[in-house]
Amino acid sequence: MWLFGIVVVGASVQRLAGIGFALVGVPAMVLLLGPGDGVRLANCGALVISAAGLAGTWRSVRPGAMVPLVVAAAATVPAGAWIARGLPEPVLLAVTGALVSAAALLVMSGVRVRSLRGRGGALAAGAASGFLNASAGVGGPAVSLYAVNAGWTVREFVPNAQFYGVVVNVFSIAAKGLPRLTAPTWALVGAGIAAGLAAGSVLARHVPERPARWVVLSLALAGGLTTLAKGLWG
Figure 1 (cartoon, rainbow, N blue to C red):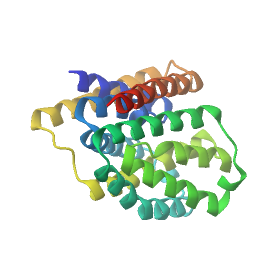
Figure 2 (figure 1 turned 30 degrees about the vertical axis):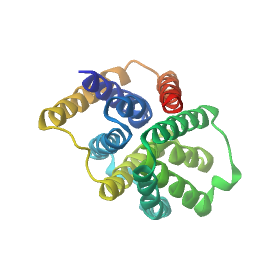
Figure 3 (figure 1 turned 120 degrees about the horizontal axis):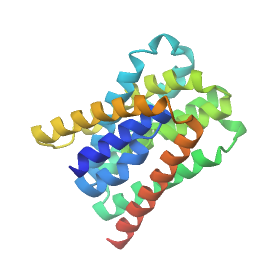
Figure 4 (figure 1 turned 135 degrees about the horizontal axis):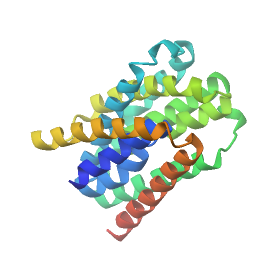
């Protein structure tokens, strides 16, 4: 039931704030399932949630803007998958926790970087995102930082982020495979995603976006630091 609760929370905060399933879910998933299956499950969940959101917003996707991000991600996903397979479990826990914590802090800071604008910025963000998504399940913050620096509005960002989430997670799952879960566990995860999306839809009508994003990022930071500490202790 712990896994069900984690998936519900992750799915609901992503529906509420536009980001957060992997940031909130990865630290807990890797502690419950191990780094390999935990990150792979986060990739699967993020793919399903992004696809569900994209179903109603696909007409707003900007294909020309997404091509550099997708191409760069495709080039670095194999390297991220290789790193995830090659590191010992305590090291991978520490690396995952550090990456989640750093990603949360970067998005919290709203840092502006001139080099993250234009086609070069898109390529850099896509490359970083593909690597991080395959290795630690947290490819979203790099794309979020690119969107902030490129001046995208929330209305522009959400459908394009959902499209990107579908593509980069397909790449990551293709490179690493599915998590080794039993059929009842898969059913539990599916039920958690459905419940989380429904809860997030209700909350989205009552909770402003900015406070919601800060709650998501604070949860992600706490989880990332916990995972980092466990990896270092191991």
